[in-house]
Length: 173
Ligand SMILES: CC(C)(COP(=O)(O)OP(=O)(O)OC[C@H]1O[C@@H](n2cnc3c(N)ncnc32)[C@H](O)[C@@H]1OP(=O)(O)O)[C@@H](O)C(=O)NCCC(=O)NCCS
Image 1 (cartoon, rainbow, N blue to C red):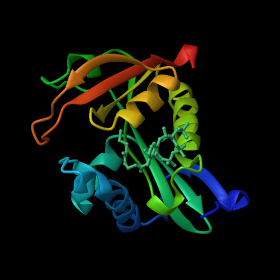
Image 2: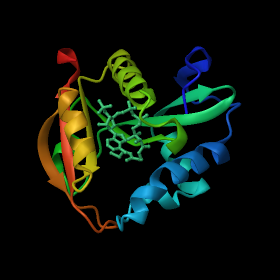
Image 3: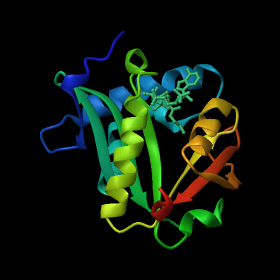
């Protein structure tokens, strides 16, 4: 399907947006990964978890023709025993990165990442990081092409795979 570019907007999630629509988009995007046997939280994202995530960070959405087709969440560093790197000073953690399957491979995800980096810089963050399931090698390579470096590996308690943690300084972006 060809993306109707003029109708595409990348913007912060707003009060008038529907959390249900956003949760459904995330579940739909992550479903094929769950089908590979990877226990990704996005595939079973509940309304309650989404609201907590929205409250703890900044959410960007891609909207096309009045429909939410993509999203990216940005949250500050946090303490976790699984990955000390994610508590680094100035770190913006990018997660819940999703584009509806019928809109994938048309650059929407890249527009969200670019906008996310600009947004994070404006918010005063100095570094961007995220983790990617190790089996999704194409995505790890994608982040490396975006200038990130592998800085750590993490296995979350709820997941059945290891993730690659990649990061880059925003000043170098
Ligand atoms: C990751 C995701 C958000 C990318 O969105 P997108 O709109 O397809 O992104 P883009 O079109 O800008 O493509 C970005 C890169 O994704 C990679 N990619 C996406 N889908 C792919 C696929 N099915 N096979 C191989 N590579 C793929 C490519 O490397 C591509 O870069 P390239 O075109 O320079 O090779 C989307 O594929 C998605 O929702 N996936 C499911 C959820 C997920 O994996 N989230 C990220 C977890 S870290």
